Image (cartoon, rainbow, N blue to C red; front, side, top):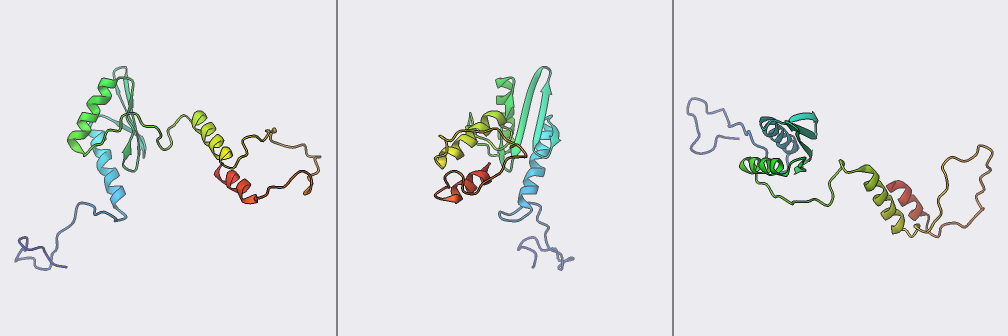
Length: 164
């Protein structure tokens, strides 16, 4: 490795330049991006609650900013404050505003999300017409391998159980 042309220091020919930016594909790129984004959000007055959630209180107004890799979801009690934050982020980063997201990773309402997910998975293997039973059988219940009809394809059942 050698110094790039035009940056050669004749007194330190054995030295090379230190790369302070990440290159696409390096293992460190996501961490460097996260550190850079964290510094930017902290400078805008946000507080960090964990590795992926930031919040900001401005009087009675609240802003929440969950982050997943390079996706940011801005939620707030005041749309003008949210728009102001988007403008501030656009000054620092190349931002693509998708407006109202249809889905986002984990901070969804779990009740709605889980029911929709479970219904979709069960419908996908045509088990949506099955009747439900309460969990937990009586300890005296004898299980029989031959009682009832078997699945034509046991992998369907396994895939639903694995997904849930």
